[in-house]
Image 1 (cartoon, rainbow, N blue to C red):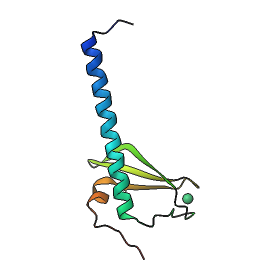
Image 2: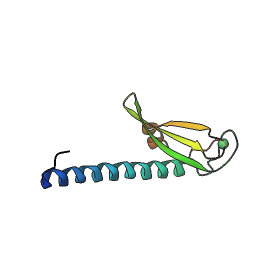
Image 3: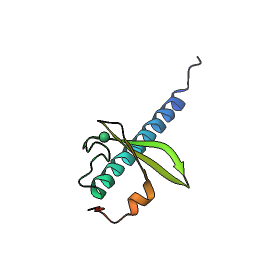
Image 4: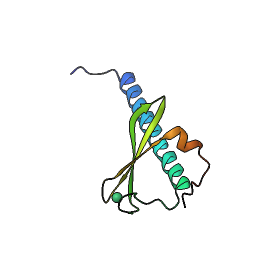
Length: 94
Ligand SMILES: [Zn+2]
């Protein structure tokens, strides 16, 4: 492996940190939107209240796709990020 010039190494580190921060900001923003949209969020199958929020990295029709994964039964609930973000909140279903 060839040694890198210090300037190049530093630039690479900055880019990695920036990408990580952006990803983290996005997940925090997603979590807030989900909390606001569904204040009484429960799994549609087992009614558990524990979820993992996953930024799938998948895009369709130019929109990000996010998954809520039930930590008890594994049920996956999928949302279009732009639609969820724009929706009037909270989203009441009763
Ligand atoms: Zn479940």
